[in-house]
Length: 120
Image 1 (spheres, rainbow, N blue to C red):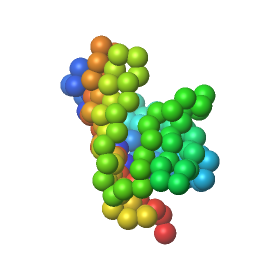
Image 2 (image 1 turned 120 degrees about the vertical axis):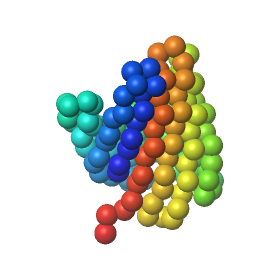
Image 3 (image 1 turned 135 degrees about the horizontal axis):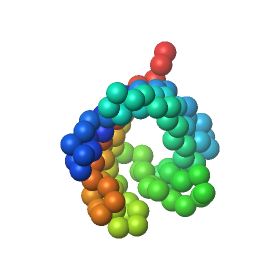
Image 4 (image 1 turned 90 degrees about the vertical axis):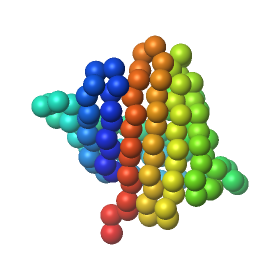
């Protein structure tokens, strides 16, 4: 996993690099996030619930974050408090996808681009 995050409020660019593990029930990323000259350990975990035509992506507490269809390209939207997340997923193959987010609201204003590729 590689990710670039542009913090529009601070005028800063951050980078994440790590690995993701995906099972039938869990999505977990682990890696390092560069914030200025600081490098921080970062972990992100979601639950997964596979249906006939969708995958529900859940926060660790069980609330739904987004629902993805089994399509090559799709848009998702999520309201977190007053902050709106607008995402795009581009599934290039079963081994790679690109994910973009634009987040706007009173608490957050950033864009991100993530690339995922299976390690052989």
